[in-house]
Image (cartoon, rainbow, N blue to C red; front, side, top):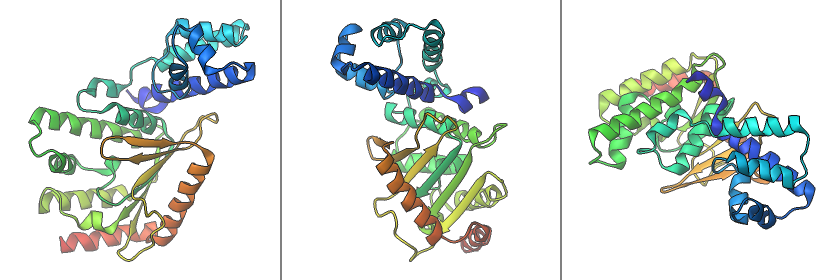
Length: 286
């Protein structure tokens, strides 16, 4: 489990897709021609190059031949990467409660070395207690069956292992003050959640800042996250969740704009060393 959380089949798909795209472009071959070679379409090639779904080994071999890749070691390395990319992640067993667009994020999150997030509605998922997670899920779907609810909680708690693995991810979260004062699940659930956040501040790989009421507005568009990976071939990815889907942005201009907004939010928020005191104050008022 820890290995899968750290490497991530999602990242392997993206890496392989990027390499195949680079090889195709270097060979001057269109997506349509590549799609024809594997008995498919240009749109499938596009999805493969974006790492949106798995790779058939036969397709990879055919594409490498088309792109003029004849070196056996290079072919073997890319084929091995395809096998790794097709290995199901732990989250696939929760396909009944996780929409496909969110499974992509879970895979990226588990492979990230740095996760920066700005939240305006809920406590970041990686810092939620089980009861708080239940309250969030119940708020979204009041009639959710208990079994489904508990599976959603299990997913959230498993995701949090990324922060406690041998080489943990670093989380830098900025939370709007309203999140901390919005009572979800009742007084005791919120008190336990606030106490948990105070404890999280003691972890060296977790930085938590509070955006006070009346603070800056560097991110008028709302909550977003930025994920960074150890692999040099992978760009930062901006994740923006919507009601029935999500946006994944990796173009340099988009990423830079969101990095700038996150930096300004960090400056406008209270410094991390003040967070335990702020949380304790809110706890006393809760």
